[in-house]
Length: 276
Image (cartoon, rainbow, N blue to C red; front, side, top):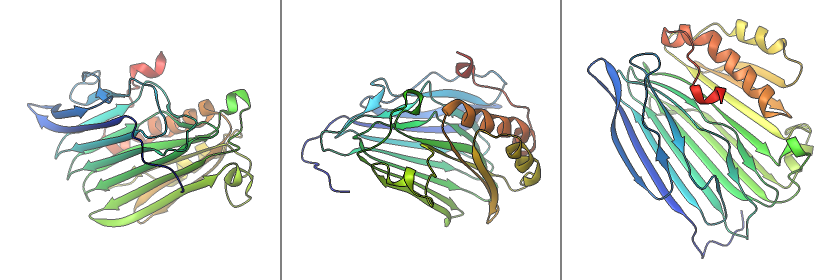
């Protein structure tokens, strides 16, 4: 990725730690620098901590560097989402970069549901997500990448995107994925996105994984996306290709609603912001 990095944009960092205290999960540590924030936690289902990750500027431009660090300690259970999409705008030649480091300790639980990442034509962007799980931790989360803005028929014809996802289980790499494209090369490629501007990855982990067949049956009912579900070294991975955010989110939410009782022992409780 050949970019100019001599001029800096926004530099922001957010660190959060969730701990089990007095029968509920509390935000035990929060530190921030620059335009990243966390909404005040709330508890619509008792002891589980719900909160929203906020980026007030609404998007990243060339030169911006964002770092998100999250840890869920033993016995804690947190659910995080975002109020809207993360946008990577057209670049002036500089790299826009966001790094996310998520750690779930033994017997911790994390639900990670950000809205989609939208890469505008001309963006030069790098997104790195590193997820570290313990053998007894539990996790359901997803990431959605959108090249261009298909809702207005805008195609990602120029720019560079590198989006990486690394899953570590007990310190060992289980899943390493990279989405790399210049312009619409990946969209056009038969071995890439197959004319679809959007891709999604959903990860499910628990010591006692739910059965994969009901997930595959649910995926087979949808004709709006290309989808598959596999089990990789004890981790369930669902992959989607599509043209619209709503259809892809609807499928992932349906999977979450179906398996949450098995993974976390409680029915699905939709974040209130999803209804606004």
